[in-house]
Structures are given as structure tokens and as C-alpha cells.
Image 1: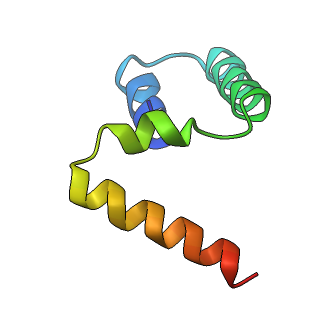
Image 2: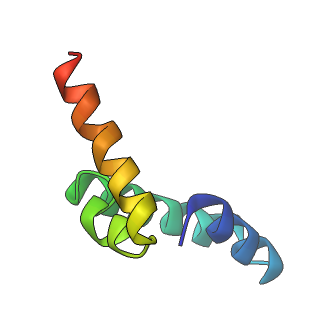
Length: 65
């Protein structure tokens, strides 16, 4: 679930602000713990041609640094 989706869900469920803050802190903790998103699992869900183009782009950025 992405940040915007979480915020929408909390708003829809009318969660109190203190509970929202705890949820946000937990999401921040998870992000830091995992160093962001799991790229391989995200990319593996894309069609083959899109995966290829993304991987090509990511490798290209390594070469240009």
C-alpha cells in the first residue's frame, strides 16, 4: 500500500489523529528498515518488455554516475 492509499484509507475510516500518526510512524519505520521498496518484487509484476526497459534504465544510470 502506498502513502496516498494509506492516507485515503485512514480518512475513509475516520481514524483519530493519534492513531494516524502511529500508522505513519510505523510505515516510516518499515521504509527505513527495508531501505525503501523491494524493487525486484515490484519489477517482477510488470510485463516482460517493461521489466527489460526498467532494468536497462537502472543499469544505464549506474554507468553514467
